[in-house]
Length: 529
Image (cartoon, rainbow, N blue to C red; front, top):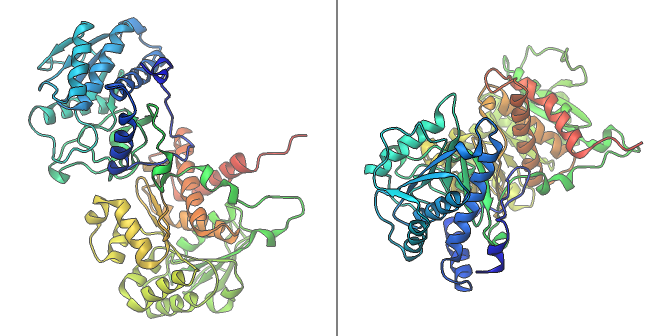
């Protein structure tokens, strides 16, 4: 027994934490190095106890049912994930919680065999088949398979995964489904279901993950399948093992400019939003309004087309220009592409702005122009090689066009796609979607934990471009501007949804005022009197 096993397990909540995200390779190395210096079975004991601590906390938090009336059903797989479940069951039984374990195939590894002996000695009820109904149980636990699963769930385990998922999706729902390490069937590196379209995975309401957080829990399908994530380090320090992190204010807050008394509009930069071909001026105006709310000192709209209004009535602070009338080289940053169209005029504007020594963000139509014009693509790459990287903000289909592939391929490994884009274009890349991936050409990567289905509506990408553009104008470095913009954009959607304004029916224009509120609340609180 080690000193670490005598203290309550530590559980970290990812909310607002810049946690390292560990791939399967990172985890295997950390686990083997730690196990070499510990008594046998220590890591499994710690993992099971941490999972028990997590579940007991959830049970205690549920005031609708007395603690003693809770009943937990666990499914244990044949490997070490099953061993973790057996230790969890033992700890719950010792805490006075009724437990039943279903073990369709007896566990095989030495550690898991030890855990089976511990559970049997404690009198845990262990069977081989699930009951006809799971309705009498308040919590279900997925301990079938953890990280490293290489083939799709099948047979009894696929059936059990569907039963667990049915409970997690039930409305109204009592209790929930806790997954151990990762929901069974989920690829912990990519967030996709093992086996692609043929695969089945557990849909959990909560996941307690061991040693460190995994990227797959926060992107692609993983965000839906994992539910609320808690991290149990189990005494292993793995912070130094990866350049991949979970996005959080710690990564960008220090780069935001101070708002001293002796500042003026020039202090916070001038942004030009470039786009708006004839009949498409709404998108750049939406982006420009977001830039105002994100604190840019002056915001210009440079319009390519005809027929635009002379000013924006809701926000006359915006300065609207025909693009030829605005000296773009005098700006502090450019956000290019919203409603830009695909005409020859747009291509010419792209070549013009790429010659300017001004920080640039490319979105929407600008990305499609880069994808189909090798000369533009080469100019973007050249800017980055020369030390002036652009920011590219593609959604999966735009990313696929830039990479010469298709959207399903991008989605199968979003981290790899973002890395490839950052390397190919020597640019900071924001690969949008659930668990947006932010990649820098120097290898830094982050996955964003904020945002929800409220963002699945037209115009939210334009708003994000305006937010990041405003931060560029305020002289944030490219990578940190992208981190901050994506985080605040998603958090605005989360906050508005908590207030009942989403996820259904939230409009893109509602995001910007909430971004302003969050920016001031988090980074510019009032001075004490």
